[in-house]
Length: 201
View 1 (cartoon, rainbow, N blue to C red):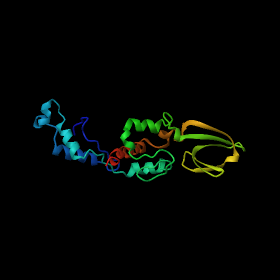
View 2: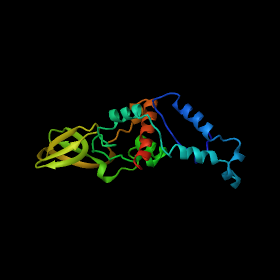
View 3: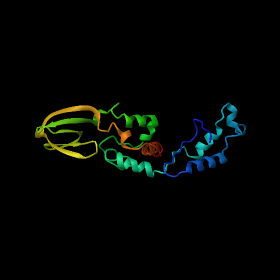
């Protein structure tokens, strides 16, 4: 398949060989060579076949969701909602794939680089000297409800708080790359990138 910037992107994270089958099938439908067979290429470009392949693929990211969705459910859904699934402690992620791979990697691997004020955590020191860090979720009378980095809610009576400071850090773990394997990280990226298309439909 021609590797031009206009070529389709399609990802499969579960079925070995399917990408190869797509390549072979698309190349039969719109072979790159000879480039002279396409009127579009008379403009000086040589990517007419890529335009046609992209049209055939519907400009979609084709994903067998399985593995990436499972990685998301296990590692992200405690705090993030995507496609109606997961919690709303951190930012809601529908359409996050539109950010592109580089921005996604930055957001996940360096979560403290640019933290929205609404998602900065608080550090509490209680009267018994217990230290709690979390994102304030709500207030229930004389009790504040915080969520920790696992999504677990913690109830803290106001009258037990000795000291409180606001952090500039995110609740997201800084060592995410160490928490999951490179293979799982790739599956997760494929799953999140697929939302760029599904959100646009």
